[in-house]
Figure 1 (cartoon, rainbow, N blue to C red):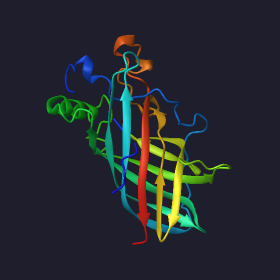
Figure 2 (cartoon, one colour):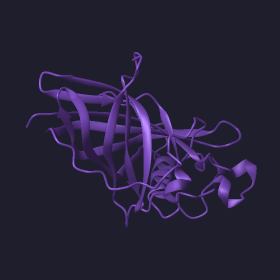
Figure 3 (cartoon, rainbow, N blue to C red):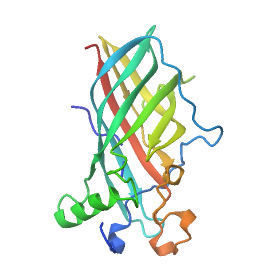
Figure 4 (tube, rainbow, N blue to C red):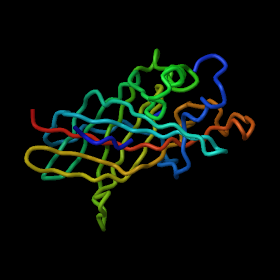
Length: 222
């Protein structure tokens, strides 16, 4: 199985439950032009095998945070001439899980339930999120954690925005994998505004706008 690498109770949630949706790293969302539909990539579409997204959300003050996972439920990675050139994958937002509250089942259930409401990801209306790869540019100097900059369109809560992030892309033996170090997106760009900086809430209950993510996905010839 892939190692976890990277996303996010009820009425009147307690202050301890408010650390759920952001983190202090630099946001990766591009602020330029709005996302445009990407042309279909030419190449071999490798079928999704397995994958996961991990998330960290934190309070602005006090250091409180939560972390967990969201399952990748399907998709593909497109390879041409030995390079990643496209693809897309789907996140099952109903699988949002908080890991750090595993020993506190009631708080865990409350937090996970709250994250699925309209305050956050409105899962009843938007049960999935998708990421469509528009390009993968090799780094001039690869590192242990990254060989490429991957760009694409993230659709969440019905909003599509372009983002980019570093990734370690490996292609060998009919398989392709992409693993990312932690990177951040600004949740408010997708309308996830609960206790965010744009809502004018008191600093002691403010949740960071940034959510820290990491992606780990593998695909292969079917």
